[in-house]
Length: 456
Image 1 (tube, rainbow, N blue to C red):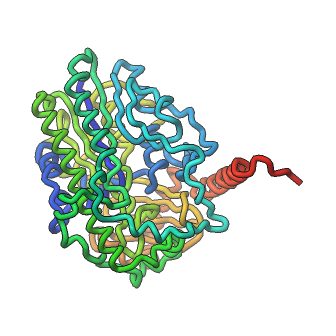
Image 2: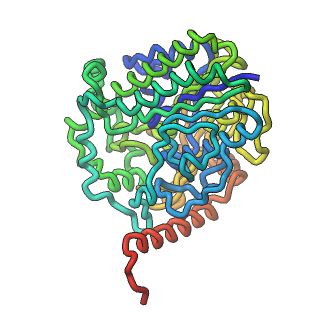
Image 3: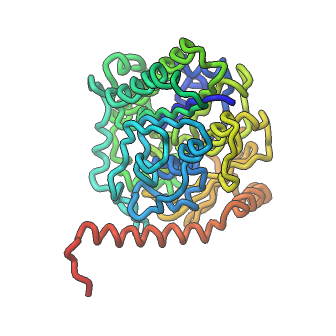
């Protein structure tokens, strides 16, 4: 029976790290964690948006089961048990530091301790309309969010400092197994750095290799997202600045992971405690002219996943696809307590290094696209199944950048992956459930904004 620490960053595209092959961004502490344990090469989020992804991780449920479709939290069912609560009820002490942004406020999530939860105020993001598609007027101004601010990391440092103090002062007093969750907001936009981090990678002020002329950039959902966020208005100077700032923010997160590893070594925890580093979703960072997340393309839906401690081979690599549900299942496996049978996921510790038949599912019903979409990853193949646009099939070992849709060329493979999707859910039914739920949310939002409006 072992303890667990899971460190979750926000919006970290794993390809922007040396562990996942970036040519010059160095993440030595992620390398250190990889060398002490296992790197999961193909890890995914349940949905490429903050609240849906985090809610799925928190609850062990699919996004469509939770009906937590977007960052609007108005009227979302809030009674799903959490891993913190279920573990605590079985004698595992659960401490949580940092951002929650899930279907219920932090104090209702059932952890033994909750600090700096940074709950999203109700009603959350109101720009989620899809029929018709909501446009964020003035959203292009977000592109000015980069450069130097001396207080850029203050909030994350407050969370990290408190978590490290907990390891010093509280964890030695706990007589049972424990599970610590640490959430940092970086490298999520805006891309502000302190001066030392801004100066680290001037060469990161480059332009994306693949822009708006690519076939995948011209897909209807990609155009929807660019229109929703006005990203076609970004200037070259802004694009370069945002990319440079992102590199600095990744370096900051890596340094915080280093502080955590140092603390674990100093306390002799590495033999009794598993540590996992991951993120809630990725970041397009200008690829195909797209920014942030909300897409089922790799840069948006992929996440880093590195794990070490009891149950993990050292300097190992797993190419089998995994997701955040598997990360959550690992916490129960380490503590050796039962996990609800209805929850999705398999412990990272038990997943085969190379399983071509394992299926990973992600979905998106949030802002910026006209309708729902679903992803199935199986072996080297990936299907994106769109409800109101042509489907895409990518052979990722041959086309890792997803520049060539081979859906028409491989109908048998497309059908195979669609059948895997339908074993998980009915895409038509869940798409309409999402639209109906969001229609009700929009009506409630209108009433909230106009409390004295008369009917009639």
